[in-house]
Length: 307
Image (cartoon, rainbow, N blue to C red; front, side, top):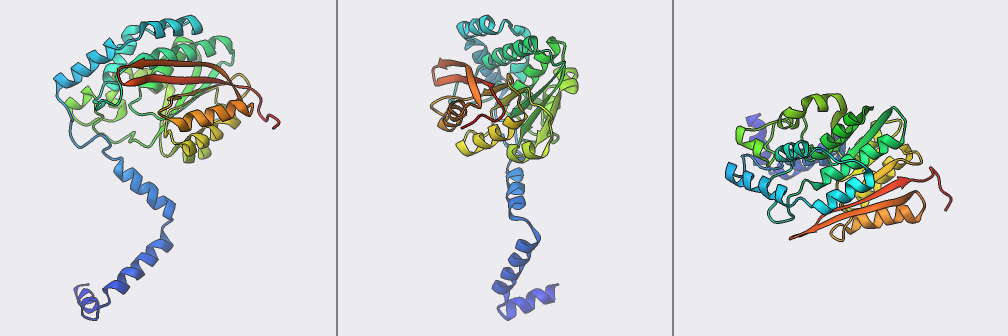
């Protein structure tokens, strides 16, 4: 091998060798796969290679999240859905999975948990299906999927929460939460206090939502929670892939329906205008740094509306 390297160098064949190698790689490897592998590599340590803050900083963020609780918003959720999540559950879960450093982008808040819990409980009470499938695009730290699982459990229905993200699900990493203080963990280890609930209801799937939604078969998606990539193209793909598996009356919950994410607004408004869904309500709250929650709840109308 050393002699081969010397010959290549001596006769100036290095550029040609590189071109040949590149051509071979192009033939052997699918370019899309290589891009996906590159993304996976970048996401191996998405929140850093060490705990980014001290216990005091994390405790401060947790207290700030609790302090931002919007009582009027939570009361609205309870009045409109008929259900209220247990405060102790939301705070305990939020402490582990929702209170990281946000670098001033938005205020920390656990309020979304009350909304998701109420919507799922309300759906289960009005639909006697016996089995409810929920698909979530955007697992993040597992806060939303665990809240939804609790709502299914409290409704005494069978079902699954299939949650999709590019973040690692089986590899231990730092998560930018207080759990980092004891080292790297898998998402299940971060949420170990809720393991029985997760084991019964939650399925973590790692991959791009566009690919997963086209390859993982779910006979029906009773509730879809879309909170992944907020670019218009991605939102259009996510909703378009979920829509065929929803029956009239099923819910689509679109997170970040705000001016900050115009792609989400455009796609949701288009779906309503074309008759695929009807609006059931817009829930939003505002804080020091702007919108904390902007969730548009939609109900599936007919499978193939005439244009």
